[in-house]
Length: 262
Image (cartoon, rainbow, N blue to C red; front, side, top):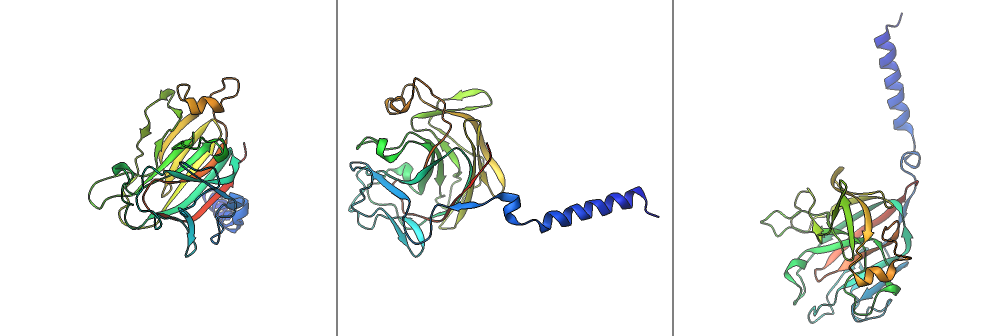
C-alpha cells in the first residue's frame, strides 16, 4: 500500500523524467544562426565616412571560422567607428553571443575603447545613418574586457540617442554598469540578452541577470533619434541588431537569436 509521501515522490520522479525526455525544440524553440561561420552573408557594414555596405579596409571579415573585427589594414584609427548590421529587425527575442577580445588596440584608438565592443539592439538601419554618424541610435549592450589588474564589468548598458527606465525612473546618463564579473585576457565569454519589445530587457551572464531595465525609448534631445520618430512617438518596440568596431580587435564565434512569443 502506497503512502501519500510515496505517491508524491513517484509523481515528482515521473515529472522529472518526462521533462528530461522533452526535445530541446519543445523547451526552447529554434535558434536562428545569424552568423554561418563562413561568410558575412546577411550582414551590412556601416563605417564613419562611408555609405552603408562600404568597408574598404575589411574591418569586418571571417577568419578561421570567426566573425572578426580586424585592424590589420589600418595605419591608425582616426575615429573610424564602425558597425555591422544584421539584415532583419527583431522585437521579442533572446540573443546569445560568444565573443572574445584579441591582440592589441589599433594605434589612435581612444582609451575608453580598450577591449570594448557592443551589441546594438532596437537600432536604426545602416541606410538611415548619416555618412559621418559615429553610432546608430540604439540600445547598446556594452562588452568590455579586463586589463589583467582592475575590475571591469561587461554586459553594461550604453544609450546612443536613447533612454531607458529602471524601476520607474527615467535614466538619462549614457552608461550604466552591470553587476557582472570581470573577464581578463582572451577568454571566450557568453552573454545572453532577453528582449521583450518595449517592456523589459535583461542582460544575462552565466545564467544570472546582471542588469535589467524597461521602456527603451528615443532621446527627444537627440537630432538623429528624432529623425527616426514617427509622429513624435518615443517608445522603441523593435529594431536592428549590430556589432561594433571601436578600435580593439574582437572575435565572435556564435551569434544566434531565439524568437519569443509576444
